[in-house]
Image 1 (cartoon, helix red, strand yellow):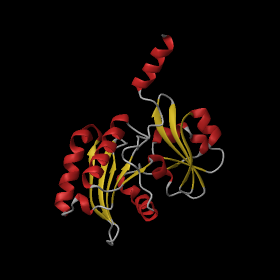
Image 2 (cartoon, rainbow, N blue to C red):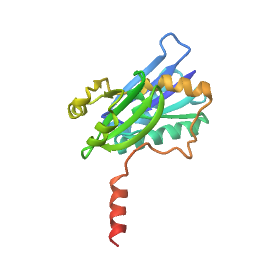
Image 3 (cartoon, rainbow, N blue to C red):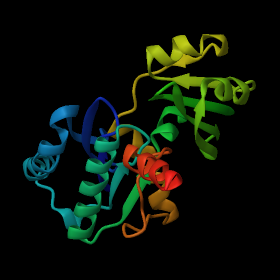
Image 4 (cartoon, rainbow, N blue to C red):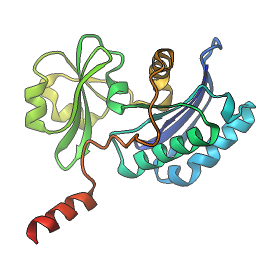
Length: 217
């Protein structure tokens, strides 16, 4: 099975072409600096496909990490994934960045990412089953993660939650979503591109200000 995997949620974007039928599944991989991802993402993907001799219609699915993370990055990656999926008439699979962070842990896992403004993106997982994802304050993370392991990929988060003794792992990249893609494809579990939304876990500034304005009027 062949997959195009896209992750633009973090400081750097990553794109991977993977073929699960090969001994080495990763056929091609590219890292794009965050600030240039929006303008380079689609051309880079097209170049990778051409160099590898792949065509859209030969893909099993397009896989996208749809947040949480940078608002701009999430939008860019999701839009590109939807575009390629629609253009090739191929299935779409969305994976949470928190799920990738928790993927290699056993039992109850608390995955935590920095959300800025003193808040955290928090995911509670039992194996690969998502119990919940939410935007939490530090105090609420501390209260929620009393049992199980805590996993982070940012030093600042590890220091902030030092009492929980979090395990620091590498920041998730597109290739980490391959195992999820295989499981979802085997189960026939695909996302509807028309209904799929970004996994922001928080409102944008525009939405926050609009709500504040409406409450004043």
